[in-house]
Length: 191
Image 1: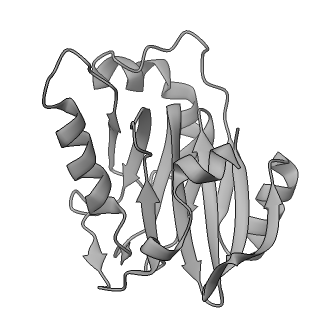
Image 2 (image 1 turned 180 degrees about the horizontal axis):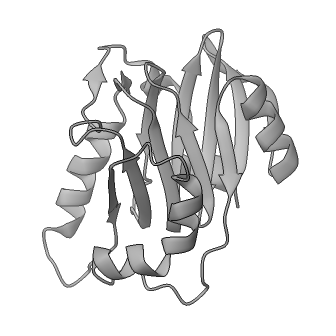
C-alpha cells in the first residue's frame, strides 16, 4: 500500500497526516514541491530478471517519465531476498544502514518502483514526510532535499533510477541522526 505519513520534524509522535489515498498523497506532495505519480507495471514483471529486460518491459513509462530527455542515465537498482546466499542478510543490513542516514543529492532523485516497496523520508522543515512507495509509484525528490531511505528489515524492492549525470546518485551526508527518531518502514506498514 502506498502511504504518506506527515510528522513534525522534532517529534515523530506528532503525526499530522496519515493516508493511503493516492489523490491526497499526490496533492500533499505537490503542495510541498515533490512530484509523485503512478504508472501501471505488468503484474507478471519478474524483478529478478536482468536489468536490460526490466528496462525493456517498462519502456513506455520510462519514455513518459523522461519525455523531455533530461535523464541520460537510466538503470535498475534494488535488493531482493536470496535465502540461498548465507551472506544475504548481512549484505542487506549493510545496504539498509547506509541509506538510513540523512543525505542529499546534487540533482533530483527520481525513482520508479517496479516491485516491492521502500520508504523515502523527506526532511522538509518543520516536517518529515514518510512516503511508502510500491510498484508503479514514481517519486521525484528535488535536488538538495534532505532525506533518507528505508528498504525494511527484509529488503525486497526494485526501482528504475533516472539521472542527468552518471554520478548523480552520489549522496552528501548531513551527519544528522534524525532518521533514528522516526518509525521504520516495517513500523509504518504494520501500524
